Structures are given as C-alpha cells and as structure tokens.
Image (cartoon, rainbow, N blue to C red; front, side, top):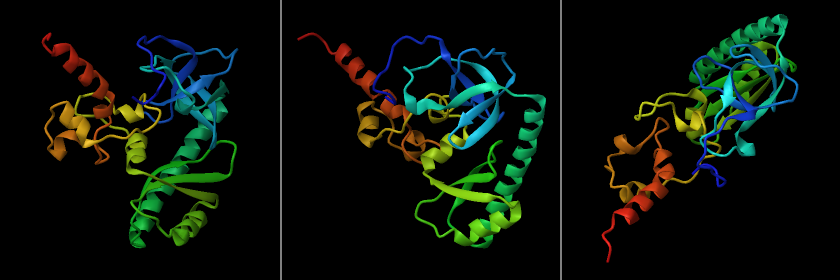
Length: 236
C-alpha cells in the first residue's frame, strides 16, 4: 500500500481539501487553515514549496487511505482576489510558452530529456521546470537559453518516469484516473512476483502502466490477493 497507516473507513477530512491547478488533472491535497470560508469552484491561494500558486477548489478530501504528510502539497492561505486570479492566468501563459520553448530547444540540442511541467509562482521571480530523463544530463546551455527567453531565474529539476506519469495524469486500464495522480503518497516497490501471485498475464503490455513500469495497483492488491487465496482453501 502507499501508506503504512491505512484505514478501512473513507471519511471526509475537514482539514484537507483538493485543489487543482490544471483542468486536466485531479489536483493536489492541500491543508486548510482555520477560518477560511470555502466555496466549490472558487479560486484560492496555496502556499507550496515552490511559492504561492492559485488553484480552484474541487472538494474536501475523502481519502482512500489515512492522510500522511507526504500527500499534502501545500496550505490554503486565503481566497484569491480577482487581481490574483488574473495574474495567475498571465503567469500560466508564460509557463506554457517557456515549457514549449524548453522542449523545442532540448530537441535542437539533442538532449535526452523531456520537459514535463513549468511553474511560475505568484510571489517569486522564478521559473521551475521539471523534466524526465533516464540518465544525468548536462543541461547548462538549455538553462541559459530558457533564462534569456523568460528573463527569469530558471530552475530545472529532474524527475523519474513514474513522477512524469503522476504530473501528466491520465487514465489507467481500469477506467479510473491514475493512482499516482490521485491518492498515492509515495511509490513503493512493485515486482513481477506480485503479478504471478495474482495469476495475471505476464505480458508487459497488460501489467505495465503509462510510465512503462509495472502498475502500482499490483502492489495495492497483493495483500488482498493473498487473503483471498487463504480464504478459498478447503478446510483440512
């Protein structure tokens, strides 16, 4: 499981809300400070490790598992003003342009990396770009070019392919949104032995996720499969 302190009860958490920063993603779990009036669909300012961002309130968090600190991506500090919403929209355009330029320039430089996300916070003159790469990449020239383009301090962060899937979002073969982009707090080890124990097809296309690695749900269901096997054994 993705959290050692799991609970069988899915109950509404009044101190946690889900804020989305992109209409294409389910959003992030954020802590709620006392005294803030909530309205579904309204915009709020979230204090995150990368600075203040403006997101839309989706709903209270109804966790699949008991919340743990790794899941919380920031704190809701106040309701966004119309000026902050407008400014956030302008910064989002800058971030999208920077991400597009970064991808084009990376191809021109023949760098084995794929830029994934770009963030420009409200309160900092910085551009944060995440990228996926299998190995270490010398991106110093790319960093200079993006900095000249945006006239901002640029920070490039390397992430793994599983983090890339989490940031990009998508739908799994089960028809639901990816576990990693909704409720998972961390990536646990997944082995082919788990697929064998659940008597699943070992065809890589059937047991691999969008990231190209073994699907995380194999680990989620490993314990349930073992319990089901024990329950189905005939009495001795």
